[in-house]
Length: 73
Image (cartoon, rainbow, N blue to C red):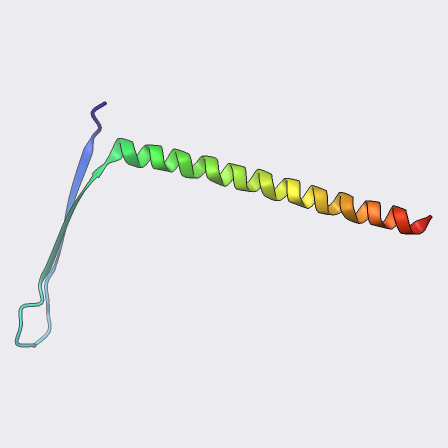
């Protein structure tokens, strides 16, 4: 499977009055299909985390209810 590759280049030029050359150039490539897959995995993990939080909250609520019922008798 061939993905689209995005290449970006950033160049930072020094405006200081120092004696050395402080210019920096950064170039990177990103496989957009790989990024899309990672975004999908992150989205699924976020959904799983939210489901887990909801379940934990429900269990905690039911535990409190059970405890109250147990001690009210």
